[in-house]
Image (cartoon, rainbow, N blue to C red; front, side):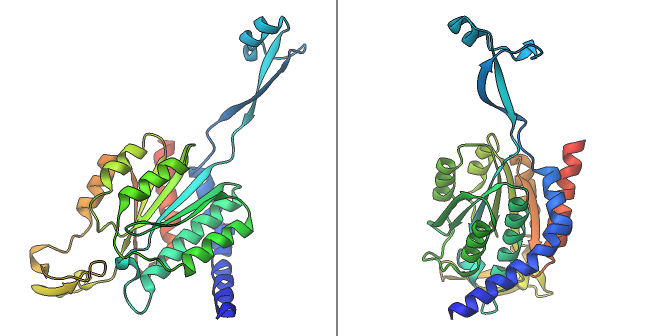
Length: 282
């Protein structure tokens, strides 16, 4: 069993490595950059130093001219906030989770290649697992292993506790990816508030369901999270095509990527990064 898990993880890394090295790392870097420069320390003034960097408070206190030293802030914090509720894990074929695993692994490897720190929060109706931000291949493999193999306890979806936890974790500006099918409705206000401090991105996983087929009329459906059954009128439009969510995300200032189960994650991510880059350069 452990050998099979190791093989699956190694295969996932190999599958993601080539597109990251040849395409996604560059696209990622063009969008998600450090935030300029940050203060490092002060040192005594030397002839030729730019007087505009003079630290007048330290100079006045010590009686010796000092300047401020700054370093370029390249390192970025990246967080993956990943929904593992029943609606994501339902189905014997596991295609929905595989799509989530692949897109998150590609983001992780692109960020790690860019020397960024990546953190992970897995959630259902509770916070299931936290991996604090870290760097390097071994850290990336730890995140990918959790995405691939972690078995959650909860089945529902609860954004409130997860966002509260994330708020305590992310003290610095972070590029944040919330990965979910967004079937719950308690996320919008919290995400909008977080856009004031973080670069918020949502990846909506679109499950293949009867709403994508030619079936119309009344259909009895079982909620994968609560286990309850209800009758849905597909003809009346109960199966949402995502237009409402798109409008909500635009109004909240959140960048939305829509990814169908089984869709090419590399192509979709490259398109999303490219669209983000066009917005930055306008």
